[in-house]
Image (cartoon, rainbow, N blue to C red; front, side):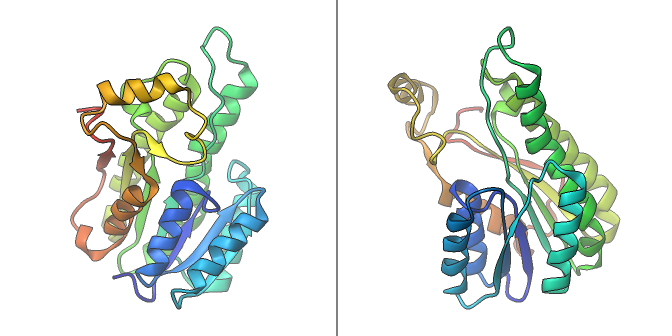
Length: 246
């Protein structure tokens, strides 16, 4: 489905990013696996990806840093020759009520989740525009659509990502580049493994499908949006949340 294409996935050493990287590799895409700190985890993902018969490389990067992102993007293009697919998945959470949230925690979450996406779109846009059909996929969140107590920074960043998605979709449509967002709900990852028990009760009552989603279910949508099957879809936000925000 994605044979011969190159996909860049930020935050790809674990969770949703890992699942997306491996699904794209399984569907024939070469993958650039971006991580910040956990080199061993990223290398494990690379080895799994190579097992699908594609080329895979790892790159350490603080996506919030404009110049560092630029340097890494240039290296990726030099290594692979071109980039066809960009998945902005890197993210952090630093939850607290607004009254208790520090300026540093607000800035850090916005810088990684939102500015990081801008940085990679900015630095890879020319390569994507040279592609026969470039694809940008931003991982947002239902928190950015409905708000969530204790997540003013995260919800603001993820809502901003939706505005970024729609604007980039309009700006790059003339060059056959699509830009869409995926808004996950509660997804089983390392990040959600430590959630308190009352969250399970909340999921049973608030989520019509009465369960968390899996990283693989997000990855399936990402592969669809990266493929020719989605060629007439741009500027959209696809919720993958079990009906939480319907």
